[in-house]
Length: 171
Image (cartoon, rainbow, N blue to C red):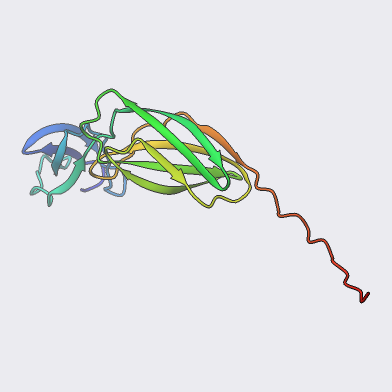
C-alpha cells in the first residue's frame, strides 16, 4: 500500500476491518478468526481515491484449544517410578491426546503424549529429586488446553550399603 492509504481487510470478499497504512506503506489489523480456515485479502485506497487490485489471499487456520478440565492426582511413588492418574470433566470431544509434563529445577519437559482415552501414566526410571507434574489436553491440531493442577513427587532411592570388607586369614 502507498503511505497513508486506507486498507480494507476482507474475509471471503466481505470487508471486516479498515486500517491506515503507515509512512512505509505497511499495515496490520487485528481481526476475529472464525473456526476453521480463514481466507483474507486486502484492498488499498490511496488519497486520490485509486483502489488497488486485491492482494493474494492469506490463509489462517483457527482451531481453538480444548476446553476440557483435567484434575491430576499422584497415586504412587515406588522405587524410581512415579504413577499419576487424572480425571477429565467438561467437553472433551475436541481432545485428541494428553500431554504429560514434568518440571524439575525450573525446566519443564514433555515426558509422554497419551491417547484421548488414557487416564493414568507411570513415569519410569526417574532419578532422585522432587518433580512437578501437570497434564494438558491437546486438540487435533496440537493446540494445548489449560494444564491440570500440579502435583509434586519426590523420588528418594537409597544407595546400596557399602560393601563390608572380608579379610580371610589362614588358620
